[in-house]
Image (cartoon, rainbow, N blue to C red; front, side, top):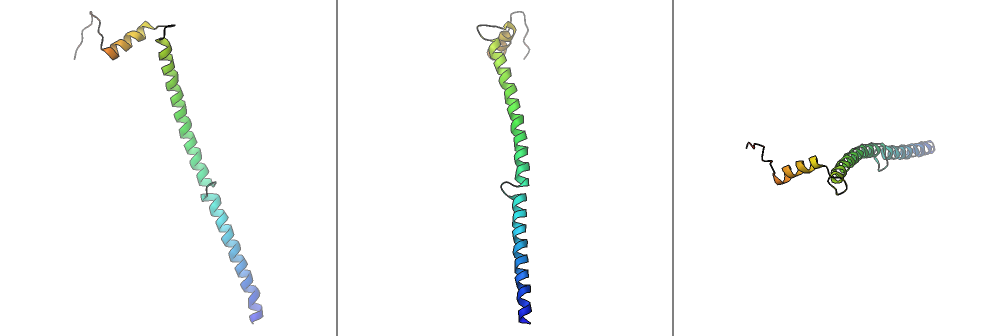
Length: 99
């Protein structure tokens, strides 16, 4: 009886090791540093960063346009008037200010 029990114990041990190894690699493929969940998180973060980059590029282009319009080479008098009114609080003599 003992001789027939040894192969069964060996097979059970091998099956247990195989299942443990398979479970480990399955867990690592899903939850590990390079797993599916991490890939989804990185993809979402990439989308957020790309949206922020696009917003910053648009803001930089707007600021570059305003700077160019107030430069010595090209002076936009309407923009200069608007900035003087906002920053310095200038008002023309024919305007009425209501506070």
